[in-house]
Length: 473
Figure 1 (cartoon, helix red, strand yellow):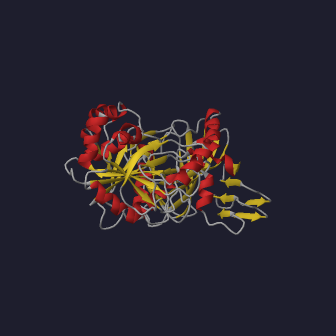
Figure 2 (figure 1 turned 120 degrees about the vertical axis):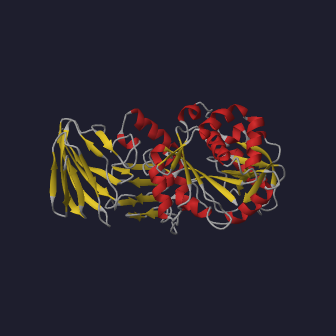
Figure 3 (figure 1 turned 90 degrees about the vertical axis):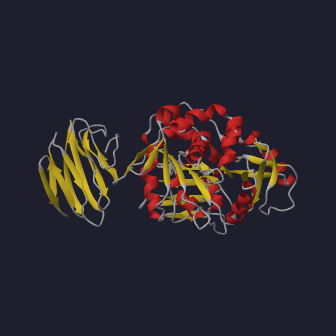
C-alpha cells in the first residue's frame, strides 16, 4: 500500500485576494467543483492507497476535517504541526509515525497543485523504483520557459517523457528567462513538482546520515503527540526547536540513489494568477472568465468574481488579471502576477485587514460575517451547521440580539433554555452566560446585533466548548 502524506499548511499569498492566511488557496475552488486539497485527495484514493496522513496547522484543522468529510474520506490521520517549519520536519514526523512499517511507501504531495491526468502511471513507476531502494521525486515536462518554477536536471537528455526512473543530477533554482529557454530546448530539465516517494526505512536512513540534528526534536514531538478531538497534535516544545528547512536542501540533494520520474500530465502549481489563467478554459481571444464576469473586446485576460452579486466587466483589456471579492479587488498586468505577494506584504505593513482575513470567518460550527460595523454596534450574519453549537460563554462589554431567519435555535441564557424559531428573536444581556445550538437538520441562519463599548472577538469568557478551542468564538 502507498501511504499518501499531504502537506496542507501554506498561505498562498500570490493568489490574493482569493487566497489569504485565514483561508488559503488549497481550500478554494479555483478550477472546478472541488478545492485543490480535495482534488489532491482524489488522486490519492483507491485500492493501492492506505489512509492518508494530512500535515496541517491548528488554524486549518477544522477546515481540513470538513473538506475530508465532504469527499467521503473518514480514515485520515490529521497531524497538527504546532508551527510551520517547512517540509523537512513535517515529512520526518509522518515517517516516524509509520516507523513500525519500514517497508511502507510514502507518497508526499503538496495540497495546492493541479494536474490533468497521467499521474497514476507516474505513481506506479515511482512505487516500483521506491520498493528497490530509490529516493524518488517527480518532474513535469516543461511546456514553456517558465521562470516561476524550480527545475530538476537529469543525467541525460530525454527522448520522451514516459514515466520511468531517470537518474537525477541536481535540483535547480528558479532560472531567468534565457536560462529557462535553454532548459526547455535541452530536454534535460523538468519542472520540480515538489512530490516525493520513498520507503519509510529509506527516508529515515537518509535523515540519519544527512540531517541527524532534526531527528531528536521531531521524534520527541511525535512521541509526545496527543489525541485532540480526532486530530493528532504534535508536542509543541520539541517541534518548534526543529530547523526550518526544505527537504530538497536538507536531504534529497545529498542522496545517492536519487531518481526522478518524468511525467507529461498538464501539471500546474497554480502559484500565480497567470498560471490560473493558463490552466483555465479560454475563449478564442484567450479570455478566461469565472463567476459573474463579462469580457468585451478583451484579449489574453483573466476576469474573475468570487463573491455572489459582484459583477466584473472588462472592456478592451489585454494581458490583464482582474479579480474581485466582496472586500478587495486586484487588477494587474498578467506578466506582473508574481508581484502579488509583494502587494500583500505592503498591505500587512499597513495593517490592512484584507491582507490576511475575509469578511466571512469560518468556524468548526459554521461561519459568521460582518454586515455592518459602527463605533458601538456590529451586525453579523451567523450560520450554524446542523447539530453544531457555539461555546458556552459570556461577554464583558457587549449585549446581543439574535433574530432567527432560517431554521431553529436552542438558546441558553443563564439557567433558561428555549427554542427560538424563524421570525423570533431573543436578547442576551451583557454578562449573561449563553450558548447557541442548532438542533435541526438544516442550517441555522440568524442575524446578530451587538451593542456595547467594545466589540472585539476577544471579549469573551469561555466555560464549555465541544471543539476544545482556546481561541475566540
